[in-house]
Length: 155
Picture 1 (tube, rainbow, N blue to C red):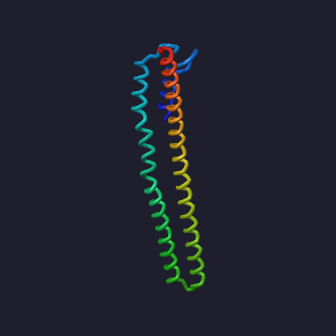
Picture 2: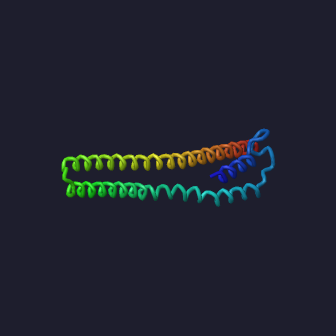
Picture 3: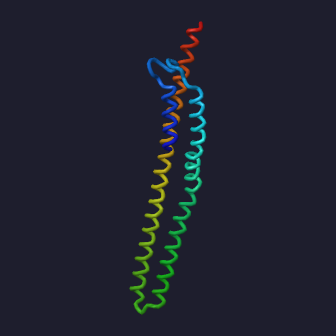
């Protein structure tokens, strides 16, 4: 992501508004093409990261659900074992209930933590894409403005 931002900054500098506009200095077309290629080569990594997050969101949640179910199953098995082997059935039932409550709380906490982490990852990807889109829009507007000025001068 740092490479992408560096390339974009270089491209902005090359096409930048120094001393009166987009075409006030000679633009190094070869450098712009090179930067565009670098940007294209760097972008797939960011896109793959975003795709990975989207694709694995379900796997992460499924994994959390699986861990939760295993924890509940283990708690239920332990509760059954305690009840079967204990002389104090009431005590065993109370401990089993507490284990189940603890397991449910741990499961809920794990699912909440996973969702919060995914939300942060999605926010970061969204901010990156919004920033890139805003930069592209600005460059297009600047380019359109330069084209209109050039067209007006030719008439």
